[in-house]
Image (cartoon, rainbow, N blue to C red; front, top):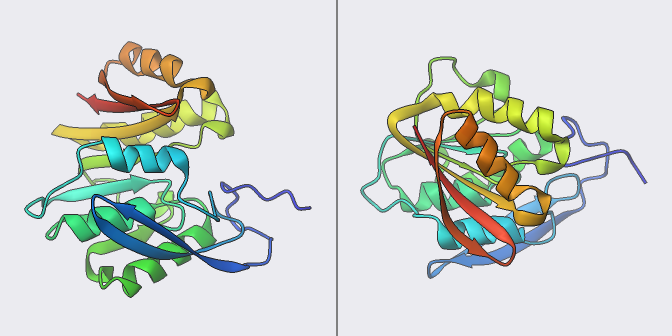
Length: 201
C-alpha cells in the first residue's frame, strides 16, 4: 500500500497502464489510463453524468475551455473532439495524469488544440469561456473552496462552469456556498446521486 491519492503531485505507485473505453453522445473513446490517477479503471460515474447531462459544446464552439482536474483526460478529449476550433486547457496537479492526457490527446489527433498544464503553469491572464470539473471533494472543504475561488473568477463575463458533485459528498452544500459567494447556480440535472451544476456570473 502507498499513500498515493489521485491528487498526489508525483504518484509513487507503479504505472500499470490500462485502457478505459466509454461512449459519449454516440462517439466512442478508448483512452490510456494508469494506476495513481483518478478513476483509473473506468470512466468515473460522476464524470459520466457530467458528460451525459451538461450541455456539450458543438462543432462551432470556439474560445477557451478548461478541464479542471483533468485526470487522464476523458473530459478534455470529449471537449476537444466536439469543439473543433476551441483551445482546451487540461489542468491537474498530478504529473502522471497530465502525461496521460497529453498522450491521449495526441492519439486522437487533438494535441494541437490541447494545452496540458499544472495549475501554476496556466497564464494569470487566461480567461475561459467554459470551465468543466468533477472537483476533488475528498481534498476537504477548505481546499475545495480555495480551488473554486481560484478558478471560477477566470470565467468570461458570459462564461459558464459545469460542475458535477455527488449529493452524499456535499453537492447541495456546495451549491449553497457558491450562491453565498455571489455566483448564479442552477441545478441543471440530477442523476444517480450526482448533481450537475451550471454556474455563471
